[in-house]
Length: 180
Image (cartoon, rainbow, N blue to C red; front, side, top):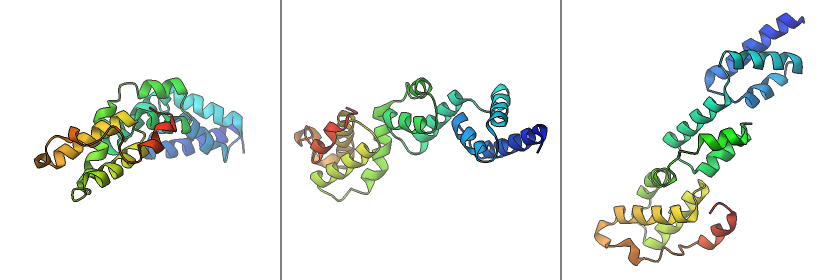
């Protein structure tokens, strides 16, 4: 296969790959390296970057917006996902800098809390706390969100501050995990 033909095939493969959704440069590189030599892959990536078809900064922003809109997670977890996709640390950090974690935690917990409507406070808080922590939210935000969603689901029960949310069940497991 000649270099010109390989370049066209690699470009075509890359365009097909990025047509389904935005991709990071590292994702495209990994995909192309399965079939094409490094020099061809480097040329294709340079060409696609020059045409603004691959842009890690734009990809990181789109990924954060998609996650925030459809499956809210903490900035910590979204940044970790971006790093796993090959986005540079500073680009990933910049992409999640404006994320409102309290709002994201509320939206992440809201739908889940509806399924817990018939539980007492201890079970409600334990399950919702775990749900939020698995989505990367720290203890403080999780605690505030549990209290808020409990009070919204039980307006007749009075002030949720009367409940002990300083140490919700399971809190000791999560506090040492490093994102507080």
